[in-house]
Image 1 (spheres, one colour):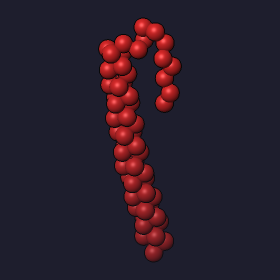
Image 2 (spheres, rainbow, N blue to C red; image 1 turned 90 degrees about the horizontal axis):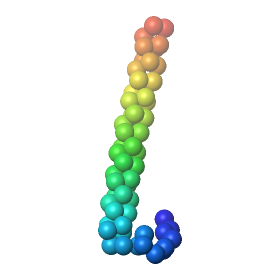
Image 3 (spheres, one colour; image 1 turned 90 degrees about the vertical axis):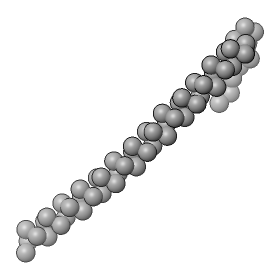
Length: 59
């Protein structure tokens, strides 16, 4: 991610805030990806159960 260096916006306080913000976004992104993986696992499990129920109904 590129930042444009413009006068007063490059204070140490701003830089510290920017780093914290990037870290927060990274945490949110990782949490989203983890939840996405978990949901995909659940979907696969439910589809497998659905398939097994169809096989049981056919027998």
